[in-house]
Image 1 (cartoon, rainbow, N blue to C red):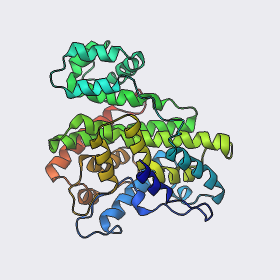
Image 2: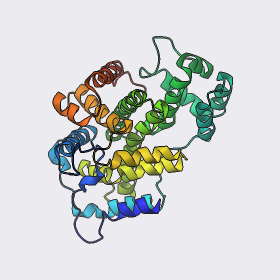
Image 3: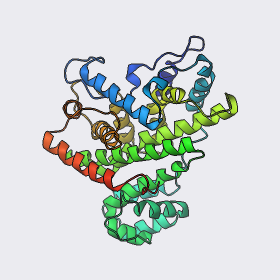
Image 4: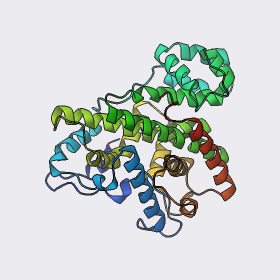
Length: 349
């Protein structure tokens, strides 16, 4: 994807000090309701919500996220180079069975026995799937799921799609220190909430629910990937210490969408995933929101609200999420139940 990464490269210069991220690199991009205006009220609300998200994920006061020392240009330049050259060392493993699984899950005639056999052919994925299937985000009731066949039977094809998507990404939750552990835990919680929101909104739109669940997880996975890669760079090429919150924020803002596209590319996800990511990154004026855009906006707001962090008012939320009030309240209610059940101490991430 040379064109995309060339655009990312243009954000940097080798000599001037680090500049604030450009507005068009935001994660949360509510489409303007009127004429094109990147400084309009919807854009400002998205930017505010994103700032609150970074303060929570990085466990830092907003003032600590404002300035980055110029001597960190080398670490950011190395991160950019690795992205451009596809030399990222912390990319998550793609299960060898993923392409076959995706084909089987997309085929309405696939039988339970065939699906079980494909999953069992990958021992690592089997273990991750059973752990995720028994988490409070997925397990129906109090019944413990003890086998892959039981998981497929109880959860159904739609449910197992979502569990597989989460299981593929779960190994990234293994943290190497306490700071990374907190970041990974919060990112995982945020990612699952956004993925669930995107899935439910896709159902309202009569779109592919399982695919939206998976694409809804990619931003959180990209954050964990960037945080790990930058940590590796700082330890080996930079200060020798963990990256500071302000440096992490710059890296996340500048490279979040590039990393999402890279993940979709190396995992050979269908073209529609790339299209959804690009639409969420750069929505056209007056364009109806995709399920991913609204899922990220709503999931972010609700996870921050549940964590008792600064977020957006009810009126502001209705201004940026393109859903009728009745449908918006229904999705929010479902997310609230998930967040209440999936307390941090109980989540098996």
